[in-house]
Image (tube, rainbow, N blue to C red; front, side, top):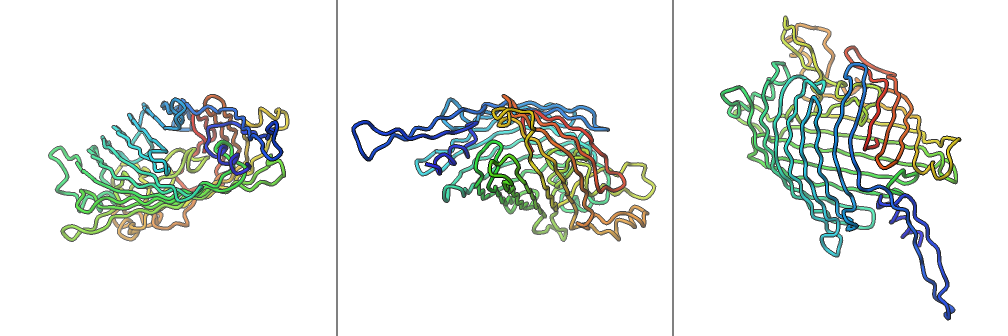
Amino acid sequence: MEDSKTKLNRLGFFENVNVQTVRVPGTDDQVDVIYSVKEASVGNFTGGIGYGTSQGVSFHLGVTQNNFAGTGNQVGIRTMFTEAEKELNLDYRDPYWTLDGVSLGGNVFYNEFTSKNANLAEYTNTSYGTELSWGFPFDEINYFDFSVGYQHNTIGNLSDYFQLKNFLDVQRKNVTSDSSLDVDNFDWSVSWTRNALNRGIFPTEGNYQRASFRMTVPGSDVQFFKAQYNIRNYIPLTDDHSFTFLTRGRLGYGNGYGDKDGSDYLLPFYENYTAGGFTTLRGFRSNTVGPRAVHKAGSSARDESIGGNATAATSAELIFPLPFLSEGARRQVRTSFFVDAASVWDTEFDVDAARQFSGNPNLLDYSDPANYRASYGVSLTWQTFIPLVFTISKPIRKFDGDEEEFFNFTLGRSF
């Protein structure tokens, strides 16, 4: 009975679950097991509003239904219209395509991205593609996904900087007459998810792990792979779980494989890891932490962020209740004090060649993972008909050129 209650909580469809037994009249050894649930809002309007000391206001929208018409199927239509990105994404997933729990899903997307408006070195990327995925349960908490997909990218307005030249050495045949880069990729991916949390919404005990690997098929215009691992661990500090300690970690690495005409394939710059912002490193402006574009000596171009092919991040969070709230309200509000740390670096970066190229002997070594940033702050999440998240944070460790973000307000997702 308790296991069944935990499984219902883990679905994320219910705000709370209660179970009771009622003796069957006229019998000595039978009871009815009755579960009563209060449904949570699983038809979500998703969006975000953020404010940074230098980025101003950003906004995005979307609608997802995780329990469409009570079937448990997920249907999503996401649109994003910001200064940096315009996106349309349609997705569908049937988690019980077969009676054995094999899932089937797919999505189609179209995206226009302007990197300069996302605090990255300038380029534009118009992409579209599709993906088909299958899920395979191993047991009650372990799940495997496998997918195949296709993606086309048309990249223009490329900046002229040191790291980009290395990537383009193997891409000359894909550069068009208007100096854009046209590439077509077919890829496959596999992932493992272990969900041992005690509930889907505001968990207080257990852990969640996810490992994924994605690789383009040999012969694609860009040959690369990416691997990532994420973990969250909740440790209750009191019997009623009102105080909980949360630790979070992320590791990521990607690179090219193979070579062409004597030049090695590298991880595409538009696939780089970045840090900074609400979902990766609170207290810093979105995407501004990590390696920066290295320009030629005498250039007046700004050294903007470009990200790197490796990342590591960690976070420690003390979740505590607000004393003036009722028991019912506490189920919808979560407050915490947190410390975040993250590093992004480029394992292919040649600091000596870059210093000679830029004429700057003091250029930071972007291949060094020890160049991490850290911050601390407080966060409040209100799980109403849409999640509202408020964050106030301050950097502890930063480098020249880093941009701070003191306050962030987000609708529709929680970190």
